[in-house]
Image (tube, rainbow, N blue to C red; front, side, top):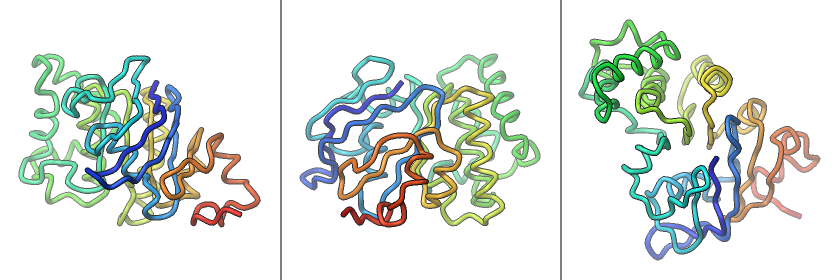
Length: 236
């Protein structure tokens, strides 16, 4: 579904990722873990076109998209949802959903909004409220819902449970599984709650200092004898 090949990336002259190779399997949840500053969020941004790619390639469904602008990648079905500023706070929930479908005809927009509300029924009672008045968890629901309206089938979520109450964080994890199982989406996840993220994931990558230190099944990383040391960046 999504492949990264020998990726070297960062921000302008700053080099953060070094020769990163990754394969994100279709209709699976893949989590990227690692200590702070290891390049997790930078990898998502590089794939989406928001970081500087020095060398390497990115493929979506076998087609190279390395230099495709971010707004064009959105049209290809790729969605990147940052931790904050992922909705239009001054617009209502309904307006956010409708704007997400700006490239679709009116009938398609209504159809996609119905799908989004089926996935996140909590939003129905907030349709006329401004998104900025929602709780952090509700805004995350809305952000993901807008991606569904846009017909995204690959979701890249950057720390979606950060600063959320445990109840809402667990709801987000449950919905991620729902998006995989009911809607057959491919999920690439960067998450601070490492243990819970790995528990719901199929596959995992561990980044340390911008390099891949582990790739494989999430369960294998979770059960690794040096798991705690690895996720804070200690490699013997």
